Length: 474
Ligand code: UTP
Image (cartoon, rainbow, N blue to C red):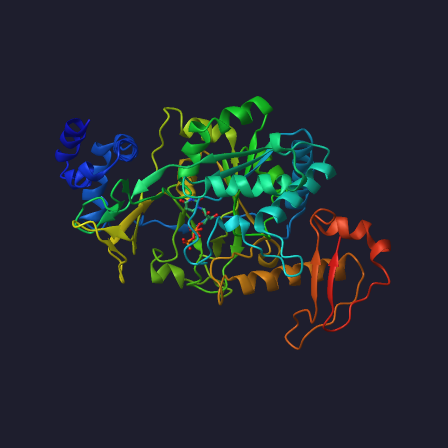
């Protein structure tokens, strides 16, 4: 086995990976051999030349325009009619079991610095429900409300699959039917040193990491999830990230619009708060919709203004999509997918030539990831729909500061307080800055949306809230 592996690796100058072979047990040798054999070395070698040994230039098309979108508030009667029809269509699709939920939860959540899969992080302000529990309850209520099964596909990575499944098992799937919750792994990519050499994490393992959320499209097919969806008659996949508890998951208008417009991949957009807000930018070039990372949008475009002084490139992406099952089927037809890679320079612990573990203090390696939004230009038709920031997007990336646990909790409280005020008729005490001067939490098991709060108005009345109150509503 050694000779065969050595020969394979030597062609690409990666034979150092076998440096500790003779120190390994047979089982350990098998693990390493499998990792090496699972890699397409021809392909990896090309990527190393293109993305590691030289810094790839991002190709910014010259004729970039802002991508058109459907506005939050329809202003013409034509649009109002379309939105009305879309709501009806969305409800029809969900009720007839044609919509699945899909969470990408394979990331490593390094910024959050939390041991364990991010979905197990306790995010709600009072009951400390985990992200997974919060989503489970939303799906459960949506199933009840629309009398339909909404299967939930959760993509993990090799690094967090077991912990994720055990978490669900231990919590009895939070009341969901186990048959309708499917886990599967995404692919991995090895981390590569700046010198082009693949890094070893231990003597018998490469330094592997998940291959980006773009890996979800191929993983859907290779895991059998796509076939399962076909069997169940799923047409639309509601894609969301594990760190955004505000995502509606089942958004009837969005689903309906996607379907009525015959879109293959649709996206929610938020109006950016400034030219350099750290959100991907929706653009269009030669009729193709695309998202350009905030760091790639040229300053002249980022700062470009319309005649009313609004930003020309106003549309930012919160990474919420509806993807047609047929589109994923088409993209992955040959059991492969062609999406560009993105280079990220990272600190990756590794063992050196002497077998000593090194924890680097500065970026020493390159990780390659593909991104889901790079599928947008391949779609025949796309739809972009504006949403209200405080209603759909509260990312939990960091412990404190921007996009943090703190900001996420505040947004959950603010959204629930607003529902209680607008739909429940309760008076909410406010601080000087307008934020609620109380802590409230609505259980998604009963309150999926404003309408659910409205129908419970009688139950909620006489439950006025005073400054400093902490109240949970079940
Ligand atoms: P992020 O880009 O925020 O990455 O992922 P992350 O790994 O969670 O966090 P950091 O950057 O290490 O702090 C956005 C979403 O995409 C998923 C994540 O789980 C999250 O839901 N993701 C990311 C994957 O599923 N796989 C990946 O390879 C990368």
